[in-house]
Image (tube, rainbow, N blue to C red; front, side):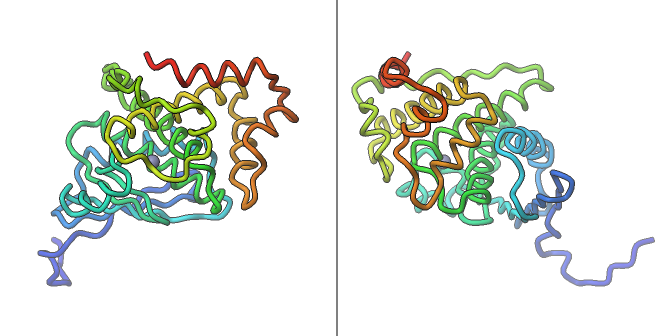
Length: 250
Ligand SMILES: [Zn+2]
């Protein structure tokens, strides 16, 4: 028989605690509901392993709190902040998240925000916006694909429609420090950022891309193209290829 020592049974349950990277990463999942939904306990480890493998564990042991919320509570605020991230937001060692009921969408959201968090833990000065968001979207896709495999599902991520008019030249994308406002501009920005990161990551490979991420996340980073030219021997044709790639939305 179990003895109930506390009278707090009507309150929120203890957080669900999950450990990763041999205990160097601890996740505490908090909810005001009776219990943490199963979908979160299933999808979070898939997304976390996926992102850890790409970005690496924090240099020091770290604890992340994931607070499950209903959409309206932070929707308005985050709508102004980052329109497409209305359902999940990372801020310091906290992620606020509306889990929803679709495991693949949840995996995308978690992969995206975990990428921001792990990049922040390794590089507190943070990379430029295009690199942070492009990598986060790439990690969201990778997490969704990893979550789809055991479910025998396939990911459908059609390119956002009607963004052609809103695509920015490479120089504009690279120097952006704020999010666009209109939904189609936002969609174009995320598509271009992810496309550029995909192209660089595929060309450099994982370890060199990590190194590049570190260089561009320094408090006083070099111009984005300097290490690509000097360390990885990109030439004018490579840069031409990159600038054309982000202007050819499917
Ligand atoms: Zn983001």
